[in-house]
Image (tube, helix red, strand yellow):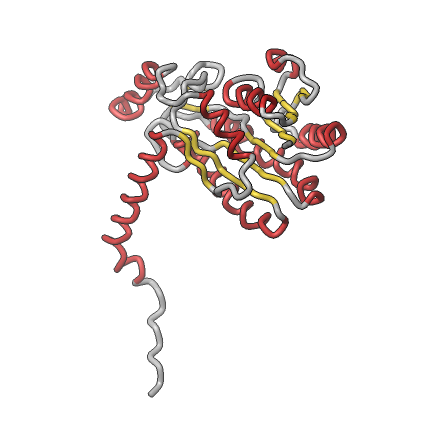
Length: 280
């Protein structure tokens, strides 16, 4: 049995994974900004509902302590809370940028730092951070949002290295487009400023987001089952993409980077000090 600590558990992936984990016989500490928003999860002897604003470090530490008091340990931390921002980099306001970073990046840091002391004491645990297809490949209109997920990719990669000697695993999950409420107003902020010069790029992406909503190829229920399987793996991967669209995007980017590196390799390595010739 695993003891989960899940942020953003009131809806979307968080709610589905909570239910799937409970069905698998695990226990879950489900958190959300408003504890009453967790009512839809129902009642379960292995479920603890807590209010948690992930940007509040003190509240994060209190929630972690409550989880340990109830269940004795934390085996899986799922940093799931977050939201999207659609708009050109130039269109996004400083306030919009700072706000999304507070949740998507600083919130992940706050909760992770709150849970890690317990995992270090246990010498076990698995931190799973939800990134995105946009955390590996950049897209027009998603630059600011994607940058928060690129940050999570780097943080998770470093965590995996730092925590490996302590018996703690770290995985960054990269979902593609799944049929959740991510493109709804409650999960997505659209920058109100629309600069005409970006009409063919970001404007087209805004239109696409409207038509793609609730028509995405990914099945959230299958994703939830896969996430429980991932959490129960003895040797989980550092990166775990989900969705054929994510796999295709990763393969395309890797091929592009390899080709670009080959084309510019000579200039890339030309900046080293010349190698000294061995004396005869």
